[in-house]
Every structure is written in C-alpha cells, then in structure tokens.
Amino acid sequence: MPIKKILHTGKVPVKIWTDDIEQEAEQQLLQLASLPFVFKHIAVMADVHAGKGSTIGTVYASKDTIIPAAVGVDIGCVMAAVQTPFKAFQLDGKLATLRHSLERSIPVGFNQHRKPLEQSLQWSGWNNFKNLHPKIHKLFEKAQNQLGTLGGGNHFLEICLDREENVWILLHSGSRNIGKELADIHIGVAEELLKKYHIEVPHRDLSYLPIDTEECKQYFHDVLWAQTYALENRNIMLQLAMKDVRYELNKGEQFPIVQMVNCHHNYVALEQHYGQSVWVTRKGAIRAQKGDDGIIPGSMGTKSYIVKGLGNAESFCSASHGAGRRMSRNKARAMFSENDLREQTKGVECRKDKGVLDEIPQAYKNIDEVIENQNDLVEVVATLKQVICVKG
Image (tube, rainbow, N blue to C red; front, side, top):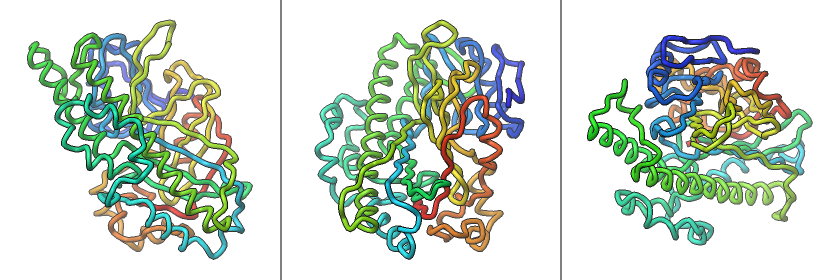
C-alpha cells in the first residue's frame, strides 16, 4: 500500500503509512515538522501513536542536530528471534513448566538479579562506565544487577511456532533503567542548552543538540553505550532462555541455532539518503533497507512477523516496530477485565492477571492491518504465533 495520508502544514511534509492515527499524534508530528532542520520530510509508520516528545513510529533525518526525546527513553530497544531445531510436538505437556523456568531465570518488571551474573561481570562495556554522564555513576551496581533482565511494559519473551511448526524464541527488551536515566538526563541537557541561547521550540521534549557541541558529543557517547548495553542485555537473556529450552526439550544438550534475526528500534544512525549524509532517528521503527532482516511483533495474543526490507526511500528505508497501541494503558485497565484478558489470550501460556491487563491484545492495533499498510516497505518471510508469553 502507498502512503495513506500527508500533512502539509509544517515546514516539511509528514508522510503517514496509515489513516489510523489519533489527533494527539498528528499534533506532535506537526510540531516536529515545524522545526527548521528536519530533512526532506517525516516518515510515519503504520503503528504510529502519541509518545514522549515525538510520536512512536516516527522516522526523521537532520544534517546537524539530534533531538534526544525523539530517539526515545528506552535507548536501543531490541528485538531478537531465534529459530530452534525443535518442532511443536516436542512442547506437548511442557508449556507451563517451561514458562515457569523462564520466569525463574529471567527477572521481569522491577525485579533484578540479586547479584550480577557472571556474564554481566565479564562485559567489556563496564570499562567505559566512568565516561558516562556523571549523574549516572551512582547507578553502577543497579545497572550490573539489571543486565540480563526483561523489565516491564511491552517487553516480552515468547516461545512461538511458525507455520511449519518450528519452535522459535522471540525477545523484546531494552536498556533498562540505565537507558531511561541517560535519556532523561540528556533531554534535560538539551532543554537547558536552548534556554541558554534563548531558542524556543514547540514543546520542551523537542529540545535539540547541535551536532558540533560538546553536549551532543557526550550524548552520542552515552547513546552508543546504552545501545551496546541493550544488546548485551538481550544476549544474556537469550542464553538463559536457550538453557531452559534445551533442558525441557533436549535433555540439557546444546542445540544448533537454525537462524537468528536482530533489529533495534529506538536509535540514531548516520546514513545516506537522497544522496546526502544525514542523521536518521528512528523512534519505534526498524531499518528496512533492501534485504534487511527485521521483526515486527504483535501483542501477547496475536501473531508476529519476520520480514525483509524493500528499501523504500520515502520511508528512509524504515518500517514499523510492532502493532502500536490504540489506547493508553489507563484506558485499557478501565475498559477491560481479567476475563477479557483470559479470552483474548486463549491458547497462550501466560499471566492472565490484572498486572498485565494494560497489555491486553485489544489495546493494540490489528497487526495484520499494520503489516498490510506497509507492504511497500517490507515483505513477510515468516509468521509466528506464541504459545508461551512471559511479561513483566
């Protein structure tokens, strides 16, 4: 499907791959489009919804500035998918046991490891911790204990089946508290910098950092560290998950990985677009250059997709990062009951209590419609459906 909607009232056009977009998100997009440094246009993915500073599902480029809030507060948020050699029948009668094993191995929500894992202590990234923003140094112990933990919100660990009944491990995780704290610090730095030079922006969360400033250099340093932290967090959790899977399905023996897909969706990168080098910010969007492997997950009761990018220039070679919320967490809690959650997650071994009610499938957009709306951005290569979902 082509672009469904274009907003023209900013300094650059806003190109949107859906007509399912709330007014608040449109207002945020127009505020971003009013800034003088936005390059060419703004590309808005099919899972768009309002967020902090800029909408989730926003892709924009600039030659000489970065907006920390547009990168997001969960810096380097990551998706990973691992196809195992196992088949669906090998899970028979083992779903509950495997789920509880995963929940014991990987802390969720606000929980963390009581002491750092050996893999965490061996991570080389700690050597650079002292060079992060000084306000973050007090969080060293917490950051170590949280490496290898899932967190809450829309983060999840799933055991899925594809249409050939192959067993997959699917993981959505981020940079935990340390990533959020770094993001909040630099959003504040950007705001204070603009105040210092009496520069106004439509919203405080659109405060930006010029590329050539020391403040931006420190931000880039910290963002890169947070992205590598998020990747290491994912790696450790995958190791823990594969350990539990092999003990349940393979008598504890190691197993070969058939294929693995990785992508992240809250980050900034220097790329070539329209013949120029520009800084591309993807907030709730994955890179989808031609041939890029990607993952677009649904909710805790719906399908997820493994995709390949088609390299669409108008989207800055990007695609959606998921289904996208269609209602706030508070509204979901008010509208739905635990019975609704049980009904909407039938056939899935998962929590079905009020603690995850805000993640109920109907709080999200229809993932099949989201995929269809971006069939000029990606092609589907595998369809996954969870049988186990671990959430915080």
